[in-house]
Length: 69
Image 1: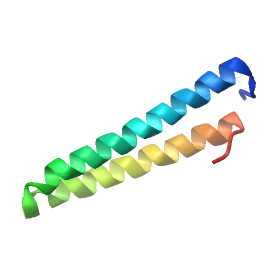
Image 2 (image 1 turned 180 degrees about the horizontal axis):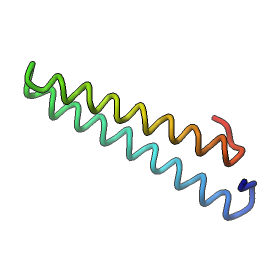
Image 3 (image 1 turned 120 degrees about the horizontal axis):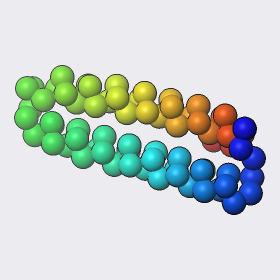
């Protein structure tokens, strides 16, 4: 699809920024729900599942851009 060049670099930077945002959000959300103790465990698992789906999407984006990690 997109190969090299300024547009490809911008797209890759956007994907990198999105991945960083996902990681930061997941880390912070898990810390918050961890404060709830056992009551927060289902939410922590939900955040983990959500983050895993997002990481799979990021991997797919990189592969479709021709920039495998």
